[in-house]
Image 1: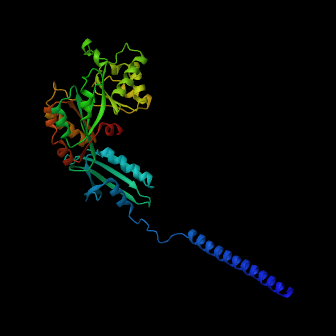
Image 2 (image 1 turned 180 degrees about the vertical axis):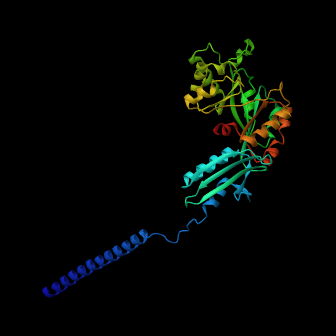
Image 3 (image 1 turned 120 degrees about the vertical axis):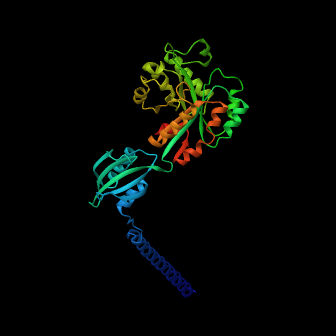
Amino acid sequence: MKKFKHIIAIFIVLGIISGVAFLLQETSIGEKLFNRESAAATIPDTTAVQDTTPFVEKLKKHLEVVQTQKSRKKKDIWILGNGRTITHYLLQAQRFLRKNGGEVLYMEELHGDPTVFQSAALDALTPEGDTLQLVLNVSDNIFKNNASYLSIAFQVTELNPELIVALNELTFPYDLLVTPFGMSQTFFPDLDRVKNKELVIWLLMESTSLDSRHNRYRPVRIHHTEQQIESVIQEAKTLVPNAKGIATRFAEQAVEHRQLLQATLEPAKENGLWFLDLSMNAKSKVRETCKDLTMACKTATPYNPSNSALDDYIKRKLKAAAKSGMSTIIIPLNAANIAKLKSIDEKATAQGTSIVNLSTFMKY
């Protein structure tokens, strides 16, 4: 019996030793596999595709060159799409060169050739040390897709079923400038029925045109305190919670008054609103006041029937978009004016201009 127990004990010991040996072997194999995988992970992937595109071709693609030619002076002529100014293209090329290890040696706008819309000379050094001598010409008839932007805004004094239907038939984005105060009880429900819109608070501000008839619209006046002006801005935003910005109504005196502007702009900024000066006052202090507040502000020219026909105004604004890259059309809301803009998106597309909301206009 003792011998039998002794034999069993030996088998148990041998089993334990075998198990430990097996575990040690597995651990060793695991470590070897882990070490192999780790080593493989540290080996550079030589199969990755390297970008072998020549630097000149990268620059062409970045500027979206539409044609290339040779000049008599053996310089390469790059034709660029209309819708951006030559100054814009020069700055774009300069930024690309600096970012990618190149350098601008010389650049200058050229004005000697009357057959060329806009032109400039650009001498540059590539990252490889090669010299580029280029002439950049902006085409007068080939437009760059989405190269320029046009915003369209309607000044709203009333809404009716006819206007709502006409607005909802428009196929492009637009803004509605609305005065929050003194409107009829049906105004805001009717406003909700308008689709594809962006809303802007159309704020009455100090002007020689204001009288007692305008009091119901709660204009911002010079004699108001900062607290009173802040209250007007806060209540306006409450009434039009989706408003993206503020545009002036009248306001030719207000924009000259630094304290009034600051009292208006500070709560506007706190409410996430930008500011658009439509006063057309050359003495406006909006730009400098906004700069101090680091706030998005711009000026724009609304339609004035006393100095131009609406057709001429629209044509001028389309042309301005193509030439400078940005423009705005701001006109009173009525059925006739909506009809004038029915096909404007086709005209804009034909010249490479995209129609965008005022909020996009404010970003550029």
